[in-house]
Length: 462
Image (tube, rainbow, N blue to C red; front, side):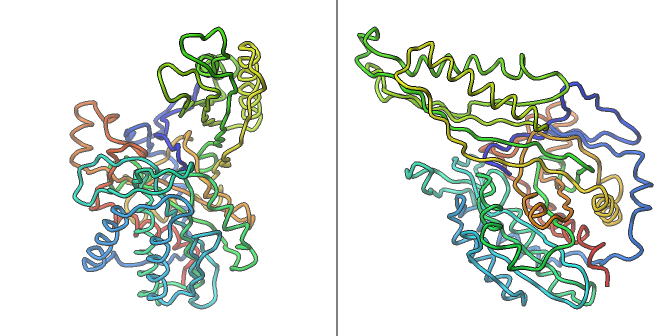
């Protein structure tokens, strides 16, 4: 998920979480409800669906080695050269038609197996510019080139290495069990999800014209649920996200004579404090928004007032009008603080990334949910409320104007999760983007492979 992917929130402001039936599964920032809709979802199961055996022990062992290698060798967005080659080589061995360098480092594999719909299965490949602190023997020690060109630590602290492993496992199963399904599978290994640029780059590279139109676009994300549990919902699932860079201009000078300067550090600090009122004073309680100043950079020495300061902001919203209100308020406040400081010129704003809201299709989602429940049992699949995380996954469905479905797969060790749940400490489980985030390999690898195949089943029925 995006570079500022946070924990899935358990509720929207003003929205009451109601248990309709069954058990509520709680984990860091997420609520899953086993609802009374289970019967309806089972009834929506198509008459036929493709079914696959569980991955063999040999395949799971091979995928574990793949995952550990990917985890130890992460790459930043649009730098996923090694990861892309691993994916492309794997697809060729399974008999896929492979196209590399789509939108930069993207890989698309096509496997045709008779008449039938095309299903797009997507996995993102990129890692984060942060240092891993898991203590695992296969922990990343790699560095990469950050946005500024400087060397930065790189880690798979969002779980995209798991996503690549899942899709590799699913493609092997599809290739080895062709008699179980019909149609066409398009495997998409996407770059640069964290920056929100990867899906659009592939689309801008002619993806819609170069490859078959899918009947549905499917994707999944590892999250800090109890390993094995799956959550999704019909309709709005994930928020919009906007990243904005701001440069504030001052007049530098000696720290002993601030009266001869215009201090951009004070200007930035005042802006940060005032920005905290955007959500609390300009957004209604039921509307929901998040404004985060994730970075503030200025100066190099204690006795030098710098010429400028830079801020990086991230904004999450569910509604387009609320988005416009929040973005407008941010510009108004920062411009006003600059004017109040007598800045020599207005701040410079840079739009650094945008993620659309993620909506799960009202017709396709019940099919996926029914297939997942049929595979794993109703107690392992539940409904989740909308979350303030963001994804660029839905750009593929928007480009082709087809339905899409996205869901979460648990990756937390069951014994650890159960213990922390008993102790009331579930929120201490490291979430995505934490330096301690590390999904348990078993049963997460196998569950993700099976979930992807089960979800595709309704469209690949023989």
